[in-house]
Length: 164
Picture 1 (cartoon, rainbow, N blue to C red):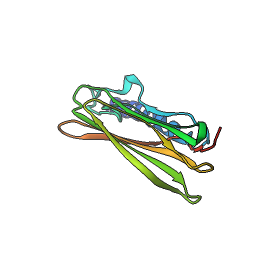
Picture 2 (picture 1 turned 90 degrees about the vertical axis):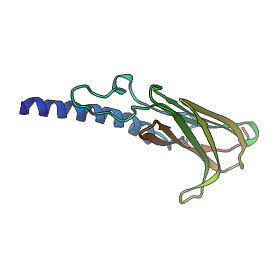
Picture 3 (picture 1 turned 45 degrees about the vertical axis):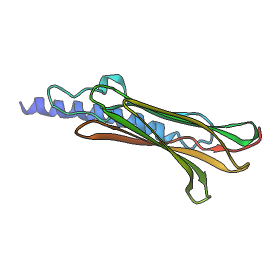
Picture 4 (picture 1 turned 135 degrees about the vertical axis):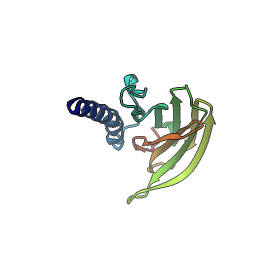
């Protein structure tokens, strides 16, 4: 019995490591300066609560959280973000997106937007950036049900605003 408990504990540890490793790898790639989108997603086999242990892994409500910040002609920034849930018991979602500019010693929020929905939220806009400034998007998503919520944050890769 003790051996079985240890085995289950090890399996749960490996599963949680894999899930958080996916998000960690996405976050670690954020500040390379390329104008590519960033997505945090849980592998589909990790969505459900284990029937044996009763443990629910991270991302039981959120399927994907993504964001993109890219430069277009004339210094116009193209911004987008989305949050998709597993559905099921999710009753509402909230997506808070903040455009941030580099201050040299950190980041300052220029403007922020809020989108809501029942099981998903998407947001797209363009923004006139200042030539020579470095921008990124901070994306915060939360999925609610009657009893609790699940949230995550990601930062897009930074992008230099230029005329192109």
